[in-house]
Length: 232
Image: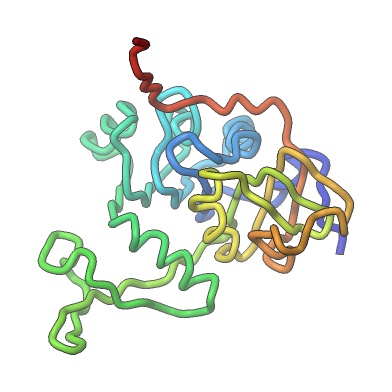
């Protein structure tokens, strides 16, 4: 099976209006920049986007929001995006805010082939409205469904032609769990090497989970918020 694709557009072949997409990253760290830019250019509409966050106004998922390509946003943090706030308050976009741990675990459940998980996060809050609550050993837990996504789109530091991936530091974040969870997983990498060149002990995502891979270009790696200590 040849998993290598020429570029983001080639890797995203088949993505269509109305698809459910997982997008890896945390803030602006480890986001699939090339794929997001390609989705903007392809003008894919009515996307349901599952991501830890919604990017910022002029970068990351914020670019998709700016063109109103996202029908529904499922995320755990959205505080850096004014356009997201505007679309939410105006009713232009459906939003599901969930605890960050629940987001990660629902991704993992999907990757492990589990239909649902029980979690204590959100019990007694708005998060629990309309959901089954079950008591285990005297403690209440919510039933949360595993995600059902058409594509998982992730970004790694290094990958090989078999789809094995290595993430670098914080960029490992949601990429690793989302890579397990898509019906089709697309990985963009900073460096693509022949199979056998990666140390097997360093691989975070085995290639069996990855269906398409390509070497990205021109990574901006923007910093979401820069905080520095005063000298002296």
